[in-house]
Image (cartoon, rainbow, N blue to C red):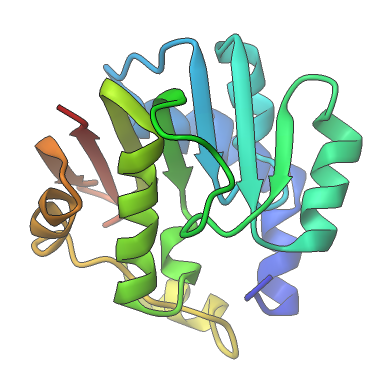
Length: 190
């Protein structure tokens, strides 16, 4: 997992899980119909996953880190299908999901090209009419400090719509949170 020790400690904490449940997911998913079959790319330590399993009938999670994927499968495997997989190379069929989501993880993807491959895979595994939605953090001094010796490749909210459209998405919307500077996005597979 491309995170330093302090970052891993924060993201595996109960405090982070509560922040995810109470603030991040409600804002990121406001007005989004996730449908029946949902894929989460990059669940990390599972803060989002534990909220999503309560909201959707069928959840699949694709985690790139083998140890973290094993931990998630041990903890949540009876309620979610957990795959050890890179979101840019998903071992899933075309059109399997009503929605694909990712939260506060795209900045851990080292290059824009790799992020673009994740967008293309999200598009591929979505059914027609399916939604790709999520959020990520915006750059700040505190955010930068948390990422010392860590992967940090933040999304530019001005460029993100065009990148999602190049992947094939329509109805793209990107909003910046007025206080945190984080962003949320929604896009649809036609």
